[in-house]
Length: 323
Ligand code: AMP
Ligand code: MN
Ligand code: MN
Image (cartoon, rainbow, N blue to C red):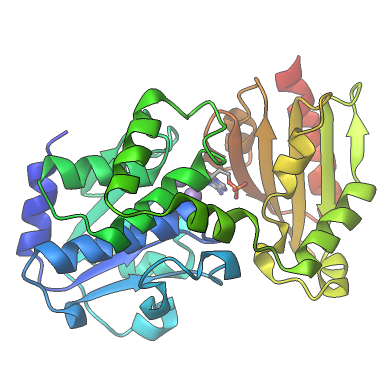
């Protein structure tokens, strides 16, 4: 991969916009923050000319990631012009939400990602499906270009790698992952502090919402399929913000009988958002049937149907891949 092209694109751009995906997670936020810092610390750019944009809300647990407090909403930057836009951890264009017009408006559109379903939608694409996280791709880029990685940058990258490997537990965890995490610790990332933020700082109502969902979980096909539907009423009951369902789909997969787990969330009366996880089955194909995508064992999509109908259709497709 020719990272020299990436360096030239950054050097040649006067104004740069870094874009994270909707329902932001630790990888998109950590990688965005790291790239922002590296651009300001290594290229001759003024902070006024480099912006980070997020979509929706930044989950409380990720607010410790350096510099996210100055990230902007798409509305805040909608009248700005940039020469270079950079999509970070974004499998498909529609995952940019309201930032998409800002991405499309730029002459140079960069796509830095690690999803195998990524469609190379940029004018410059750095997509590495072998990487555990976009954070790992970023670290490789920074090292290949000999760019300075300070303590705050290391913290952001470590968070990205930690969260996308589920705390170094998923099959995307390799010797390389752990080498790189170790390098980041040597550069100043604090593993226990970061883990505390990511895994031991849940709002009480988030835990209670999860408990309520687990009690109402539905099991089928010899308990191989485990899922929950989360309505807006459930969300209101726990004064839940949008990110409160994060982690629920992994909790369902954790059950010993589960092969595929899903969470379907009501967006509105005709739209449902799906999260899929599996132990051994490629469920990215299920997400793709509904126009989504992702990884082999973690994928997602949006179904333009009411919650219950969406669930029926989804379970039908899951059954097909289970064979
Ligand atoms: P989530 O369940 O939202 O955590 O998403 C799981 C994985 O699937 C992530 O890697 C997402 O980037 C990906 N994903 C989720 N929704 C979509 C979508 N609509 N299109 C493409 N990829 C998606
Ligand atoms: Mn992500
Ligand atoms: Mn990722």
